[in-house]
Structures are given as C-alpha cells and as structure tokens.
Length: 253
Length: 361
Ligand SMILES: Cc1ncc(C[n+]2csc(CCOP(=O)(O)OP(=O)(O)O)c2C)c(N)n1
Ligand code: SF4
Ligand SMILES: [Mg+2]
Image 1 (cartoon, rainbow over the protein chains, first blue to last red):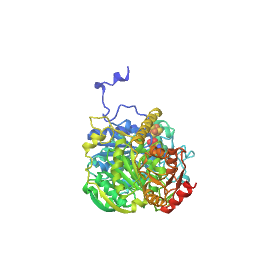
Image 2 (tube, each protein chain N blue to C red):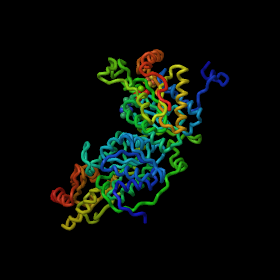
Image 3 (cartoon, protein in one colour):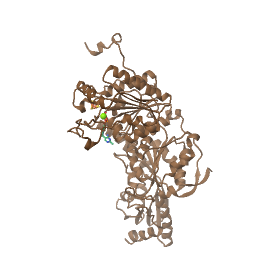
C-alpha cells in the first residue's frame, strides 16, 4: 500500500491547513521551524486573514519560509525584518504583518532593528526561533548559545570570558513599553504546540486591537547544528535550554 | 505657473516629495541633509496626504524600511549624506536585486570616513557603479539647482517605476543648502489601493487575494542557472536605460575646441569658467551630464571627434573622468581637475587648469 492509498477522506483525523503550501520542506528531520510554520499557518486560517497577512522572512534556515505559507512575503536582509515590517505595517495599517526570525538574525546582527521596532511599539508580531546556534551556516555560535555549549566557532564550549553571556532577548524586549505581549514557548510536544498556538493567536489578535508589538520566542532545537539526534536534541533542550530560557508569559498588557 | 517659493534644496526636495504623492519617507539625521526630514516632520504630511514619515534608528534601518515599503508597491524615499549612504547600500543592493522602485537621495559631503560636513562630489563611483554588492546599477540623476532638486523627485521616480529599479538623486552640500527660487508642481494624489493593485499587482505584497498567486519579494535565487538568468534580465534593463534614458545639457559645444565636463554644483562653476575662457578667446564648451547612470557616453564620443581635449571638473580626486576616458577611448586627452575634501574650486582655477593640463599640455 502506498501513502496516497492511506490518505483518504474517511481516514483523516486531521487536515493540513490550506495556508500551508504542498512544497516539501527543506528542514532537517526534527527541526522546529516546520512545526512553527504550521502553527502560524493554522492561526492565519482560523482568523481568516490569509488575504491580509504579510510575512517577512529572515536570513537563516527559514529564509525560504515563503515557500511554505500561502501568503505574500518579503525576504529581508539578515536581521532587518523588523525594519521592513515597520514600513509595511505603517504603510498598510490594516494588514497583519509578522516577522519570522532566528536567533542569529534577531539577537545578533538585527539587535538594533528589533529593539527599536519593539520600542516604537510597531503593530506587528515577531516570531523568534531560538535554537541557540546559527543553523544555516553550519552550526556557529549565536548570541544565545549557552555557556559551555560547543559550536563550530566555540569548539571547546562557549567561554564567557571570550564571547560574553548568552543573551535573553525576550526579557530585554519585555522591558520596552512598546511591547504588549511577550512570551516564551516551545514546540517539542503536542501540549507545548497547543500552548504556542494559543500565544500566536493572541499575538495576531493584538494586531486587531492595535496594541503594539507582540513577541513570541520559541525555544527550539537544531539537531544538525547540535550534532544530536532529533530525540536527543529534545532531551538536551529540556535539560539545558529550559532552565536558562524559562517558558511562560513574561508580559501581557 | 506653479507656486513660487524661495527654498533650500533640501526643503524643496521634501516639499516636492509630498506634492508628488510619495507614500513613505524613512530617514536619519546627518549634515548637510537633515533639513529633508526636518521639513517633513514640520509639514506633517500625514495629516494632508497620508504620507508616512519615520525617523529610523539608523540609516541601515531607514534603507530597509525603504525596502519593505517598496515591496508593498508604495512610493518610498530616503535621504542621507555620504557616511549614511554607505550604510544604506545593503538594502539598496537588495532593492535592486528584488527589482523594486524606490528613491534614495545623497546630499554628498567630503570623505573618506567621517570626512567633513562640507560639500563634495566624491561619491560618484559609489552612486554609478552600483555601490553595494552584486552587479547592479541605480538610475542616477545629478541636479545642479534647487529647481532640479524638486523636479527630479518625479523624474527619477517615474523611471524607477518604469524599470522597477531604485533611483538616486546625487546632490551635494551646496545644492542641498543653498536657497533659490523654485517653482513647485501642483499636488498629485497618492496611488489608491486599487491603482497599486492594477499597476503593481504582479509583484507587490499587498496581501494574497484569491485572484492571484502569492507575491514574494526576494533577491534570493539559490539555483545558479536561474540567478544568472535573473542577472541577464537586470543587465538588459541597464542596457535599455543606456539606449533611451540619457539626459545631458550642452552649452557652447557647436564651435568648441575644448570641453569642460561637469555635473551638479561643479557644472555651475564651470559655466563661469567657460565665460572667462571665452573672454580670453579660448573656445570652450560645457557638457553637463544630468543622468550619471546612464552616462552620456555616445555624446562624449561624438564630441571627441571635434574637440582637442576635455577636462572633467569634479569636487573629487577624479572619478567621472574615468567614464569620460572610456567614452573617448583615447581619441583626445582627457584630464581631471578639482578641489576636494570640502573645498570648492573657483572659476579661475578651472581656466588655469584647462590651460595648463589640456591646452599647453
Ligand atoms: C549580512 C550577512 N551576514 C552573514 C550572513 C550569513 N548567514 C546566513 S544565515 C546566518 C545565521 C543564521 O542563524 P539564525 O538566525 O540563528 O537562524 P537559523 O539558521 O539557526 O534558523 C548567517 C550568519 C548573511 N547571509 N548576511
Ligand atoms: S540546520 Fe538546524 S535550524 Fe536548520 S533546518 Fe537543520 S535543524 Fe533546522
Ligand atoms: Mg538559530
């Protein structure tokens, strides 16, 4: 029996949202990016805002996010998505504008753009995929890399004296008056995905109310960059990332 | 006759942007162009035309806002001076790669580095050779009056739309700061959402409606064959610009034995130098490129059949002179003269240089 023989209407317990394209995702097995794409797509479908949503993709593994969501997209320069989102949302205030950014993109090269967009309270949603590493370029150290964590540019583990401390962007932007909703989630279990979806829904709802910037961090894995199996990555994330990047709602105004 | 006003070049360009129906301006203060954003913030065009004005956190952000705004099919503009334009080059390269219309104004000051706040023309290479990474060109107009500062907003933007290519107004601290009489055009309404959909619906990110595929604004193409094809398309566009969009102004070239070539402020000084030389009996003409890209290559090549030599007069160490030499291809001597680092040459110095470097040389 082939897969197409199994996928029949009568066998379906769950259906892919039409906001996701049929393109095969290029992500590694176990990668968090694909799950988060799906959750965003479902929220867009449930809110019925496909015609009014503009995504801004980053430079990072999710640079090609535009291949997977059936909406209009802009592909930004590395770290600059919040600047594009600022202009897009100001010029088309009735649209739902979101950025989708990795931790290298958002916390390193784009630190200025994200802080100022949040500080201005741009009426946008920011989805921040924190996998503690530069996935796309082959596993280099990110600002979010944990102390002692080995990467290709910290082969003996991140040394605080040499490279500074891991950066908690989410706590940082929560301090800015322009942000309205700031939360940290994960996506490694069905329960975690449900909570994440609720938060993303709330973030998009905030755009309706013109409340300012909603910022959602997703603590993620990068099995290729971490050089672990997808399963071991989840365990490593729970044991090491969660204590340093605690999950929960940090700000809700 | 439009409304007449006495204005600085920087004020005129801001006023012209509002009247032309620009949707968004994104800037960051830097001398000698801060009056552009100051004028806009004082004018509050969002109350009048709905134009959005944002003071960004940096030129990097301002130019990337330009990119985002352009991607929406909106008329967008940014301005800066030399050190700020260096920071904008990242986004400019993306805008060129993604084929979006947008307008960048550079009110040039002396460099390199932080340089000086005084006027210069030392960003010619950066403006006409692309500036940022990759094989691309901007449409570059060089105003030499406050009137042209105002007029070129529309002139450049129409071409930017026609070619889906970013344009630059390459001005300098003199034109930006000096006051002159300017005739302002009447207000044009901004494009409506329906007009944007009609004109730019094939690419602008205005929201994926069921009547069309999703629009993706990107400069990324990982397949080399397709990236090469995309580059061929860009090059064909630049070639068409070279063939059809060259603008220049020639004065006293009919009987000229020597030619001064200058753009922007320097062309105004050259006018006086030409008069002084003619008083001395030297038959001098002046060619002023108005578009620096595309460059009046053909016109210069033709004049090389007539004159005995050419002097490029630039407030730089000599940049445009290289393009003149390429155009003339060794037929007659082509030299450069100019003061720079914020110093402005005098008409006398130009005549002396012409005599020493071209006539006696
Ligand atoms: C200006 C610039 N600098 C560097 C790069 C190379 N680069 C591409 S992706 C990337 C890091 C991406 O890491 P992250 O944002 O964490 O995304 P991930 O791949 O982990 O999802 C870098 C440094 C680039 N494309 N542009
Ligand atoms: S390298 Fe890491 S972030 Fe990139 S697709 Fe693979 S697992 Fe995902
Ligand atoms: Mg990462």
